[in-house]
Amino acid sequence: MPSSRLVSVVFGVLVLATLGAFVATQRLKRSTPFVERVYYFGPCIRQSGSCSRSSFSPVSAWPTIKLRFQLPKRQTGVTVAIVNDSGDEVRTLADDRTLRRGQHIYTWNGRDNAGVVVPDGPYRLRVTLRGQGRALTAPRTIRVDTKPPVARIRSVGPQTVLPGSSKLGELRVRFSGPSNPRAQVRVWRTDLPKLEEIPGLPQVHRFRQSFSWQVPPLADGVYDVTVTVWDQAGNAGTTARGAPNSGFSVRPLTLRGPLEPVRAGSVARFHVGPVARRLRWNLSPAGPGSPVARGEGRGEVLAVRVPRDAATGLYLLRVQAAGHRALVPLVVRRHNVKGVLVVLPAITWQGLNQVDDDNNGFSNLLSAGDSVKIDRPFAHGLPPAGLNEQVIPLLRFLERERVPYELTTDLALARGTGPGIAGRPGVLFAGDETWLTDEFGLKLRDYVDKGGRVASFGTDAFRRLVSLGPGTLQDPTEPERANIFGEQTSETTIEQAPMAVNPGSELGLLSGTDGFFGQFEQFEQEDRLVSGTQLLESAGRDPKHPAFVAYKLGNGIVVRVGTPQWASQLATDPELTSVTRHIWTFLSQ
Image (cartoon, rainbow, N blue to C red; front, top):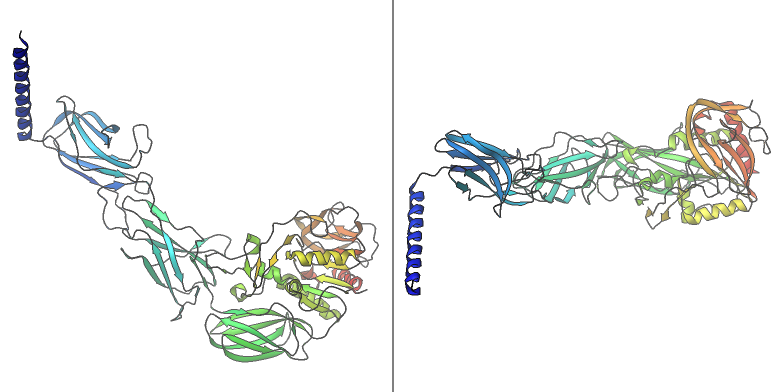
């Protein structure tokens, strides 16, 4: 066949095929579609008041989407599937089924046929009639979105809340993130052993990125705010606990004062908050005793003149305002005494003080590795840790014994103000000396090496260091295995029992007992002394690991009572009183 004729035949065939396809297409267009009214709905997020129609998250609290379509007539061999943007099938919802005429609803959980969450992106519904070779892919997409939205707290204020106050009684929170669905604000109390959520907060309005709450009478404490936002797919994003500027404190009455000794006859200044109010105050000896001064005042600064005849000792300033009470310890010196120096653990008081300095919703504690401000009120207006149980009973003992002594705090020693340890026959630490500065630790060790005598009535002491800044205690260290004297100890709790005196006594500190004294449950036992140390006297429950120890270190001597319960029994146990009297006499020589 001539080539020109062959070309004509091929061209004719192509024209006929094109016409046939055109006719078939027009026939399909005029025929009734086999799938109608394709519709997606979900998730229905309770905060939004409506349901999303285009996206969802299979890893959210609303992990499915519903797909609805209608068949104009009964169909056989129907396959319902989800396909990705490339048209590849990822999940079969129905395979070769016979479906009745009418509406059909399927649920997809965002997973493929293997049960794995599909990648984020657009997907479509495809309905196939296998016997007819027909398929319909819905033009509308379903978007799988598993990326959570970002929520950020911009501000929480005021930093100190006073419930009922017109100025400080309303908490205001500003945040960023999606606001439809509406966000949720939650408040947590954080200065308890376990986080406690505060109920009854009002709802955040839709399309608002702010929140106001007239704070009810909450307990004095530290609180953190979290904000949760949702996107249209149902993903939630929550601010981290302890985020910057996310916290506030409830403080009905705050009182701050000096933690270094003041002279009798001088004026001590205290700061009162959180607002200026009329107040009444009195200054009393720590423990039982009548006030040595009292008065009234108003404003944020309270000036108190310490009486000239006030004896050396620890006093408590008590303030009452608007039905609330607060107190703060005050160390008073009357005369210069060259005898024993008694040291109070002010650094420990602040290191364990449950106060939020940086407004992140959590207390700043040296025990948590934080920096803490030195000049801050004591939480809840209550005495600092260990004051009532350890410090006051020991100072009351010294008062009953009518012995002269000099009084200071470890903070004053670290700052180099007030009386020092040089030239003292002995130094007595009246509580848990949990932290000390490196410089003072070196001075104390040098003091003992050169012949000084130290008695510690606290436990877990002299094992941690802290740096002293202009107004902060910072960079606290983890506890060392051995304290600055080289002694290794461990704490133990057993059934209540007395300490048993071990044989061999070179100092006579335990004389006057019948071999047993006190009733204790908590012990700090000696595990090991540094090489070259000589154990002079000991007592406890385990002869190999005594709690009470006195040992020679260099040319000096260290006495450690070995239980935090010692001071609290001084007023009721004659033998314990006798041992304490011997310790004091030994320090005074």
